[in-house]
Structure formats: C-alpha cells, structure tokens
Image (cartoon, rainbow, N blue to C red; front, side, top):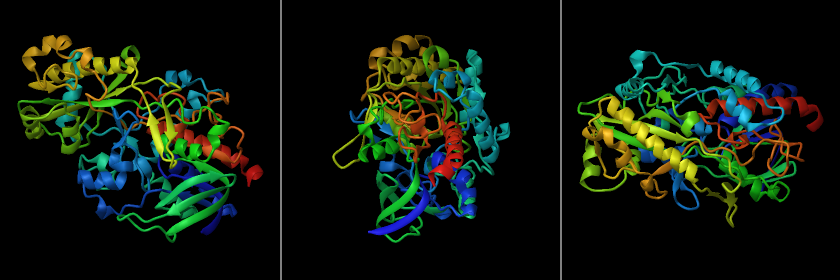
Length: 498
C-alpha cells in the first residue's frame, strides 16, 4: 500500500469540490498541501465524441442508468475531472429567498447564499443567450407559454463561445460550458493544488482515508501509480455528490452517531414530453435549454423547462413500442420537447443506504403529492405544445400514444391521474440533493450551516448533499455558493485544525 500525506484532501471535483479547491488554493502559498481526489478521469478535448453511449460511459456513474432500489427511477450522476459540471446544461440560477427560508437552517441567510452565487455567476461568465442564437425548440416553448399567459423566463447560462452543438449533457465538444474543469480546477492547480484523477476513495477514518487508483480505459492516466493508498489528512472535505458522499460516510461508520446520515434525499423527479410539429423545426442544433416556466411552482410544485434530448434518451422516455413509437422517432426533425421537474419534499425514509460491499443504494418512494405534480405538469406541458402549434403530443400518462391537436380541449380526460404509475412512465433525476443535510439537531441533520460534520471538526461536506430540502430550481449555483461558505470556514479554522 502506498502512503501519502496532505494537510487538506477534497473528495470530488464538481461544483462543490472544484469550488473548495479554488478557494483553498491560496493556502498552498503558505506551505499547506491540498489535494483533490477525483474518481473519474480527465477527458481530453478530442474524446468528446457526441456519441450517446460513448459519452454516457465516459461521464456518468453507471452510464447514467443507476436505478433506485424499486427500479422506478434512473439517476444521472457525473464523474470525471469537473464532476457533473461536465454534463449539465449550464443553467445558473440563484435560489429564491422563500426556498432558503423554508430550509430554516440557523445561521444561513438568503443574502449570504445569493451574494456568493453572484460571485460565481461572474466568475463563470453567466449570461443570457442572445435571441439570434435561440432555436425553434426553445422559441416555441416561449411562444406557447406566452399564448396561454404563463410566466416564462430565459435561463442564465455559464457559456463562453457557444457554437450550438446542442449536446451539453454529453459534454461540450467546444469547451464552451464554463464548468469547474475549465475555471476553478485549473486555477487551483496553478496555485499548487494537486488533482489526482482515477482515484476512488473507499473509506474515511480519523484524519486519514483509503483510496484506490485505477486508470479508466479512456481519458488521461492518473498522475499517481495504480494501486491502493493510505492518505493522511488533517482536514477532509467530502464532495462526491449527494448519493456517494452519503454512502462514503455511511460505509465509514459515521452513521452510528448521525441518524440523519443518508436521509431526507430529494431528487426533483423529472420526465420528458414530446410533441410533433407539422413542419421541420431547429431543435437539436443550438443550446437545448433556454427557457423555464414557473407558473405552477408555488401552486402545484413543478417547473417546466425547454429541453432537447438525443435519440436514445428520447426513445427510452416514450411509453410503449411498435409503429407509433417508430413514427415519432422518424419525425425527430419535427420534434419539440419539454422537461418537467417536480419539487419533492424531504422525507426521512427517502434515503441513501449501502449494500454489503459499501456501494450506494437509493431507497426512494415517489409520494402521491409528487405523482400529482407530475400529472398536472403533463397536462400543462401538453397545453403549451398545442398553443405553440404542435400537431400531436406524446404524454407519458396519456390514454393513447398520441393526443391530436383536434383533441386539445379534452386533455383532462386524455391524461388521467390513474395512468401516472411508477414503472409505467419513465421518471429520471439529475438533481440529487440531501443526505448530509445542514442543521443544528444531531437527530435530523449531519452538518452545521458551514458544512462541518457534527462532532467531527476536521470533516466537512461541501456539495449538494448539504441541502436540507429540495433547491426547487436547478441547483448548480447553490452548490457553489454553499461550497464557498465551507471553504471560508476551513480557512478560518485552519490555524486550529492544521
């Protein structure tokens, strides 16, 4: 077994880990050794092929197909130099005040989160895409919402030099998306932070951890020799994502004194609706996610977003098989898509567990309230499609595969609640939150408002696992803001802990 010694070790390099690394990098100038351990490899520019199967294998845990324990949801979690910032669409929103108020975390204010989010908006070049770069898929969503009187707004995006490849979720082949792989991590490395890729952390102890380095069959090889490592560190910052941060701490025995560890998981359960237009529309070229509708956020607990997915993802999200399925896929150049995000509630029984080998198992049950939200959202999305001129719509809970434009007044009957059944419709999640939630009570939280694990002063969490409830919007900037807070606390405590 190899042995290494650092002062601070950060586990994960995504929105949380990359942020912490950049913010702690100035400590390297004081002789403090900082390392980032990243499970996945660093992908070279020429390896972004745009091929769905290839890039899913390169960028996602289990190729993006990890299932919940009951098999009713698929979970998308990124890995690699940059984590999930490699494979998300760049949507960069500041969490609303009422959401932070609902979290009710003592010592955490919306003003603090918002100011830190603004810092990373500027750092990552967040802006609105100019109208001339918006494709028909996005503009039709805007048109349909406005026709119905629904509130619709443009997403701020963290792009620089976007060429409209339209495959953001498969990694940007033009390096336009300003994730941690392009902004925070290179800055951290330039200042002296060491980033070790292809390094999977398996166990955390008191001021030490065990990891294994094994190179992936793609990407750059690790700077460390392959093999097992015992790594000493006075401060450990866990940023492996909501599921894997929770699982790592559970498998390391921290659940014995922290009963909330792994619990209160929220997922923003999502599904896709597809509509066919009579004419060809620009859809798969151009940024795929330019607008969102929050008309039903407060009243019915869901958001609607423009989106465009690739043939494999589209096909798997359609309900049924046969000729109708084939017809819709053959009409790909005429398709418009809408993504639904349900705002689920934090419930103790929705949790991350571990199996006998210490691997994560997500035990999550879709509540009736969430299923109600998904049902209402399908009807709202269908109305938007028809208001934008669609000829027919495929709604996952529809009585039939297609709802025709001539049936637009009969949506209530054609999308019944009793068809919204887990396992029958394809539900996914890419916004995994909770498991190491912030708070004061050791019975219902894992860390304090600064990400310090209760009763473990040198152990921190700094990723989406911190969220005590759903973020209720795309969580990227919120995770960076919270990670910035954690880094501030580590800097202030460094004299005592190091």
